[in-house]
Length: 546
Image (cartoon, rainbow, N blue to C red; front, side, top):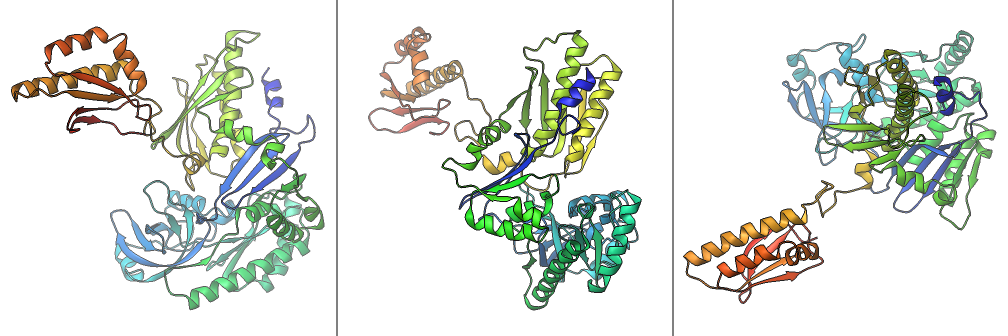
């Protein structure tokens, strides 16, 4: 049964048939969306808005504002609303860590540096040396490794890198080499020979890494990639020399062009774009890779929205639901909090054809595969806690854990998965570079303030009676007799007129003034107001109108 389940997850193995991979790009004036679809199923999804600057990967000429020895960090003014966070470990360029991570992932390299006590070969400075070398007011060139999340400003590093399709150039570094992720010896030797020829064109003050994408690439294509990087570096150096801090000296290309750089591989069947201007830009960029890549770019001219035409829009909507169905009939429940992501696995109506243990295993295997996909689609990270259905068999636990780790291999973000605990809890962490897509595309409901629940009609009825009792007692002590009006939501008024009518009648008998109730359908169901009928003076108000 386990083997059959593995085969059902098509991206684990292609032996069952050819994998169809398409990239669909939807271009609007206020938003660009990119979807990577494999055999009709949404596997990757990204959104970018022109009015929201893409910080991650951008390089800034900044000015150190202050040093915080307690935090072992400096705060750098890079021209944003919030100063950037620069850890002392990240204040000196690191060479070798990029050989392990050739995906232009500055945050990954920063994490490596912390675990290795500052990086291999990089000097370690004391607080006094840091203060002398980087005093407040000094100018530094830094790259954003993590965007602003919540109340925190962006995180930056002095280890700079400019990524191309096949190469990564590292200004200020000296290392030249081939990514350690390329394990095939003949291919490594071929790429090393190409690298040796490219060094003549590489600036002396720059390192150069051959990325895994260069596997099988022609020398002419890699050379073309280097020329683009050299031009970008020249523009960056000119900006650093001429522009005052703080300023941006290098910006990553927009989402559509980054998609070509990171996703255009032999496995892609076609790229379909609905915006004519973006289509021309992407086609031009793809032509730099190869003639085949250029021919894979198509312009969509259909009448229906492109995401609707390819069945993506509904998949996007489903991806952000709290409840996510599984093929067997089970389902996942996602709860995203500020501290962590909690995911609950449920069997639902699924009973299975074999034993109960086999049925639980099947649901859990489906669950971890879908969780890996959802983490990518939602771009959520930090601490993730997955509450699996309890499995008695240790062998089954190991199978689920193994499948989950396999599913996470395609994730560009670094992940760390712990073994399943005795309580059936699987804990993991996933890197966060930017706000989750849920945070980017949604806002808290003004009705419930993001809670997802509101007070019941019974609770509001009890609260109204409690407040009216207190107000009438106060008015009696003041020897005032005024008519009172209570403004409430229709659902609450319905309860007061039916189930709680007798209780309100008793309250009316005790108070000599007149009590009236006004229905307001625009009012928040959890709020009510008590006012003096004649003067309109508010005696009590709770909640806000929606």
